[in-house]
Length: 498
Image (tube, rainbow, N blue to C red; front, side, top):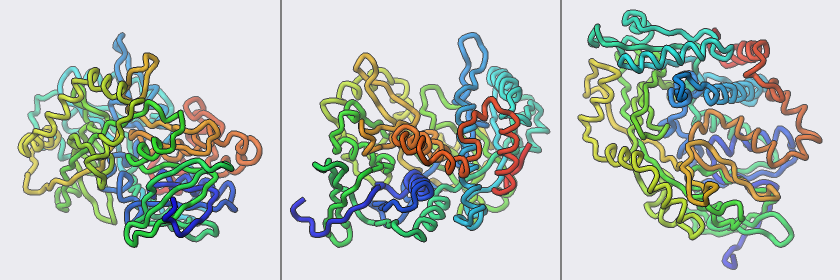
C-alpha cells in the first residue's frame, strides 16, 4: 500500500475486539507471554457488536433449556448428544474464568456473571409429552443431575410467577428447571479481559481502525493494511499469525486473504429485535431464563425466551428475539455487505441454500412483516398478563449464518461455528453464530489444538491444565470430575450447585 506512512510488526494480529479475540489473546499471553499481540477494531470501543450485552442472545448457554439442542429421533426418543457437547464446553469457560479470578486477572465475577435458573417451558399436550421425555433423558445423565420437571401450574408459578398468572388453569403446560444456570454479560467480560491484557507488555489495542486489505508476505506471514477512521492515516502491520474474530466482518476479510480454504463459503445474515422491560415491580418477580420451542423453520437464534439479564448492575427482562432479514453482516455494517460477499466460488452454494430453505425464508419474511401487536401476542403466550406499556423495542445484534459447499458442490446452511484456517495455520477465521460467546473458551482451545498442535505437544499442555483442570478429560463420561469442577467453579464464580 504505497500511501502507508507507518509500518509495524507483531507476532499475532487479531481483528475484532469482541469476546473471541480477547479470549484468544489472553490464552496466547498466558501460554507464551513474550508474544507481541495487537487487536484492531473498527468501532470506537470493545464489544460493540455481537459481544455487547444488548446484542447477544447467548448469555450463559449451557444447553440446559434450549430445546433445539435436543431433537426427537425418528423412533420418538430424545437425542441429547448436542446438548451434552455444549454443556461441557461451557464448563471449560467456567474453569478458565475461575483461573483468571483466582489469579487476580479479573477482580470480581460480579461484574459479568450471576446465578440465574434455566427453564424450558412448553404449552400443549404434545409438547408436554416431548418435554417429559427430554427431562427423563437428560436428568438420567450426571451432567444434568438435579434438573426438575413439573406439569403443575402451582409449582411452575413458584419457579416463575409471570408465566402462570392469568393463564387458563386447564391449559396443559410443562416446565423444567435447573438452578445451576447463569447469566453472563459477555460485553462486561470482554472489557475485563481487555483491561487485563492492557496491563501486559507486548500488547496493544487500536480502536476506530479498519483493516482494508491483507495479503501474504513473500518471507512468510501476512501484511494487513489498516486505516484510521478518524484521522485517515494508513499503515501496514506485519504479522506471523492473523486471527479474524470480527463476527460478520470475518467472512469478507477471509475472502480477501485469497487462501483456497476460504472458497465456497458464503454468509446468510439474520437480524433481530428484542422486547425489553426495566420496570422494577415486573423484573423482580421473574428470576429465570425461560426458553420455549422455536417456530417451524426458524433459525436457532430465534427461539423465544423470557430472559432475566443483569446489565451494568441493573436487572432487565428481555423477550425475543424476533428474527428479521438485513443484508448487513454487522449491526454497524453496510447494506452492501451481502452483495459484496458474492463470489464465483460461492454463488452456487448461495443459490442452493436459497432453493432448499424456503420455510426459513418464509419465516423471516413473516417476521419482518409482523406488526407490534403480533410481537406482543408472542410475549403474551409466555406472560399472559403483560402490559405493553412496560416494554420497549430494541434492535439486537446481527448474526451471519454460514453457507458452505457440501459434497455435491452445492450448498448447506450451517447454524454452528466454523473455524477456517490456511494450510500453514498462519491465518484463522471464526465464522458463524450459535452457540458463540458461551463456548468461546472451548472454541479457542479447539483452534489451538488444530492450528498449533506442535506447540501444544511440546510446551503448552501443562499450562492449559492449570487454566482448565479438566483439559484432556471427558466430562461427559467422568461424573466425579464433573462434580468436582462444577463445585469448585461455582464457589469462585458465585453460582449455585445441585
